[in-house]
Length: 175
Length: 302
Image (cartoon, rainbow over all chains, first blue to last red; front, side, top):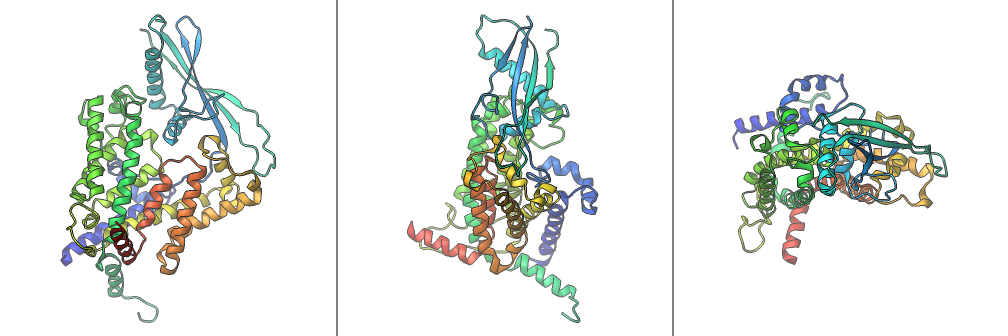
């Protein structure tokens, strides 16, 4: 290779090293400030990254999720979903992708995925039930049960009181 | 060197030596085979949930994705109807490219197409991605610039008796090594920002959150001191893999420690392929002469 190619490759390498180092730093750092200007192309190309696994604060609560469907006659049924950790289920069939989805569904900030997943659940519920049942699904609630882990220095694992909260409600518009 | 100062000429020499002194591509050959196997496993996992994760009526339906995500990210799905035929086609091309890279057939060309299909699939549903996916994506991005990874253990390699791998300027391998070291170092850095990591309790919580648990941590070892040691040694191991791995004498012991650490994590935690992606990344630190020796031994045995 000639000198011009070496200079070109060197410039590319220096830019990449600066990008890899500077991208995933806390806000306020100079490099982070500079790299914010190229956020759009970086995300577009899929080069965005974050390496804060279980950090700075790891998860400290066990979480279970269930989905309550309310039908047009106001009766309610529970939609069984075996790929999420659910009450009464020892093992769930899902993996970390399902857990990522679950975290997005129970996030405090409302997001498009919560709504899309509700639509998916309705689609799955209506496809799975018998054709004799034609009642319309009116509402879906995402119910999250949180159990904080006992303090880490506690020798015995005593059960901690769990709390259940409705984290999202999807109401279907008129037919 | 003069009076403790270093000249620009000397710095440029160090840089050139680090990035451009030709070396055997044997390490990249081993990396290519291992990395493509990893991509294959990942693709199989993805394909199993094809309709659920990426289908037009899946958890992120195509209309919503096109409205909310498509304008911000690159994905070939933007230019399709988003139906199952499109999903299956992208997956078929993805699998084909993985096999081409695995077999070393036009490796660089298919690595480029593979990057396109990988980000297309990942961007079709970014909600379900984890660090392993991101690390794999970045590794593949840099791997696109590698031109000699198919020089051995490939259908393009000349048949006959063992020949040494092609010599190449290792700048691409160096960038990939820097990426791996950066992941370890940043991970330690972010952990150090948290009080639970500093006080030594973090690993207790990580290992005891049931939804991430693969195996229960053994009862006889459930003592605060054990969790403290595990927490702090995690920080030390990650920090060392990000920094001391550049020192020749520490490199192989650290690779062994790193592999054992990742295997241990994989045994207790269900965090998918992340551990295996990082173990694959550690291959990049194998000395080319040792990689060549290993390849020779393998080919002789075969």
